[in-house]
Image (cartoon, rainbow, N blue to C red; front, side, top):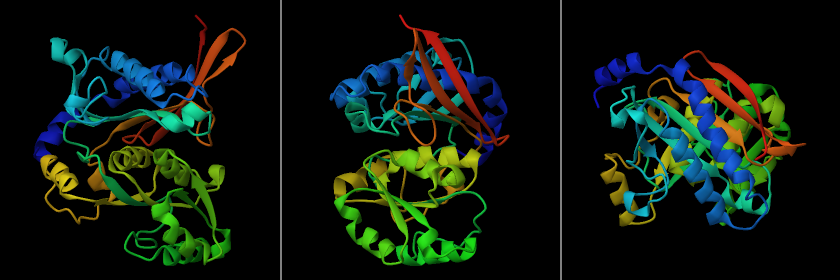
Length: 331
């Protein structure tokens, strides 16, 4: 899509009007997932989140296309890449939008009752988000207030820690790095620890891991680094678009099949280093609702005869960040 077309569609993208509807979408997925917390069934947890999110999306007055989803069309009933959602496809009108989503980021976290499982969704004008294939992405992210060039994905991890500490007027031992706990990160972990920095290892949920950097005073995390899913990189970029900060990403390919997925998505430069405004090119809205307790939002919970959720809702056009507490009577 040409940039002029994106700008034209931005005029129709009523982000303020759609934001509350988007919060309802992530709330519905989180509430459905609540009943699967600690029950050991990842697939069941994911499926109920998908079903709830799809139902709510199809109530919105949008002509939406899922550009970051849960696989290809033949993997339905997941919310697949290319799926059309919203009342706009049935003659109700509404803006044409891109949708990036993860109905349950942290299926394992939910199944095991571990922290930081989220229902996550972002929406922007058509053509505003990188159509990232389902491959790995190397990522580096920091929160707001860090000058460009202080850290870079092409620098050694230890150098990034030292440079960030220097910029902040701290010692490297005062820096905390968030990294996914995976065997592929062992060398990176060793380099980071050689500086004296602290590492917060997370079992899953790298969208939450990146968002943590944007609220370093609250979470204690200064920088995120390592490789995770490329779709999650786009979702994280949508959050940082509102919260401030920097994210860089580079797609990683293990075989020709994965390179083919990139070409199918229209990506020709396989070695490109993506900056935040290349991952998300226009103003977007973003919502994340807690499923299990975390540093960003509280998890869904029973309080007496009611079920409560907390959602963080963001609009990049205004830079607004709202926290929504929702309560409803248990059925």
